[in-house]
Amino acid sequence: MDYRDTPEEAEFRASLRAWLAENIPAGWDKIEDRDEAARMQRAWHRTLYEAGYIGMSWPKEYGGRSLSPMYEAILNEEAGNLNAPRLPSVGYIGRAVFTYGSEEQKKRFLPPLLSGEAQWCQGFSEPEAGSDLASLRTLARLDGDHYVVNGQKMWTSGGQYADWCLLLARTDPDVPKHKGISAFLVSMREPGVTVRPIVLASGEAETCEVFWDDVRIPVAQRLGAPGEGWRIAMTTVAYERGPADIGFIASYRHTLRRVERLAAERGLLERPETRKKLAAAYVRGEVLRLNCMEQLSLRVSGREPGPEGSVAKLLWADAEQSLQHLAMDILGADCMTGAAGEWLGSYFTSRPVSVYGGSAQIQKNIIARMLGLPR
Image (cartoon, rainbow, N blue to C red; front, side):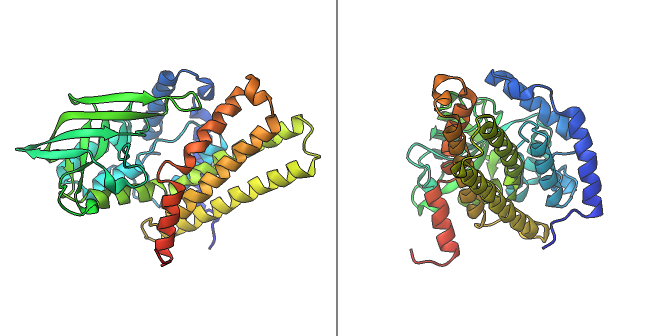
């Protein structure tokens, strides 16, 4: 496989790099107030959209440019190299809508999703249905031309800032658990929706729990057919775990360079053990990069992402957690005294990487099934 840029891709990369240098918000990574950071992120989404960098691989009829997924990989890579703010995650929600939605739903929901006018979250996991998502208990009862929803969702990232939610709820409790789930497009402003941020060990309220108390959802906002929720969820997480994570590679390299500088500043590069750990961190990042490039190559050839995304998810978690652990080893007591509090927060943030999006155990089960191993 030849992963070098084509002439067209090289021209796009150069133009994009120049645009990013001019448009990355100054001081964005120094913002400490989470609400202010959310406002900055929303404005950044709008800036990218107006420049034509959002949804580039989407079909033109849904607001995209029908370009190869390679262009989005280049965007992820260049944004990471220049330490830009996080890129908006519109791909996996958008794929669910334009794959399973009605024409009316596509016209209503896709344009504001692309432009950043409407922010979205996922209502998947529950207190008793995290890794075993099919065991979810949130119930949607049909009442005339509405569904009435009651239940609770957990680990809803960005729920406190979202306008809409892709919600999974059980519509038929009398069939096998995978078959009784439906998907809904729900306004987070509906009466009966209560959002409570969850403060993690890092000190940040990155995720939320959401309560649904007699929330009425029009039947017209059910996505797909009744009972099709599990299939829709699998499409969503396939894109969530897929080659889009290549954006992590550039940010990982950026962090690795910072860790190397920390080691040099503390005179630790002469220690064989430190050099060995830094080399291992580089190898982990390179293995993940090649894995993502292989998946991306399949996407470019027309194959949709599948269960092999679980391999990238495991590699990503291992690389991120190992690198942050190495930073702790280098910084020592400074992490605990407050002299390097930023790094301690990053370490805590890395811990749930092996849980969200499907725990490591679930990813291994998926890989085992893919390989035909005995259950």
